[in-house]
Length: 124
Image 1: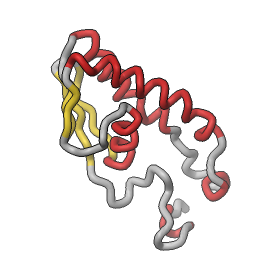
Image 2: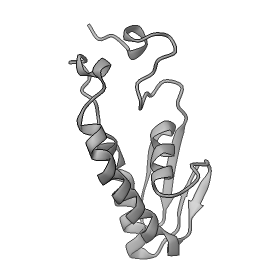
Image 3: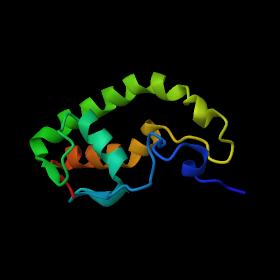
Image 4: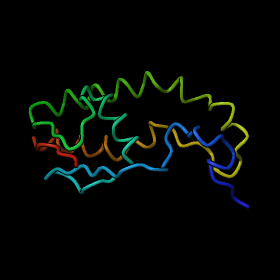
């Protein structure tokens, strides 16, 4: 039987990338299909790109390559921290943790397409 995160943790403890209570953020560009992700993950990735994390927002085409580079470097630096799951998540056999790097793949592809086609990227 599957048990939710809230049942395993205290009422105020959440998984780092919990889907509970999150808004959805949709990224759009003329160069790629729209992608939607949970707000907490999206804001984390936006901050890694060097943005304030505000929603809605945008990156103009000229700044997309730099934002993509910053995100890639931040994810590479974050891999060491993601390699070892928190102790509370280590015993969770039903739901293996999904790394931030894996969650970022669609956004990385969107940014790369936007950089190639010199297109703006917006999110709301």
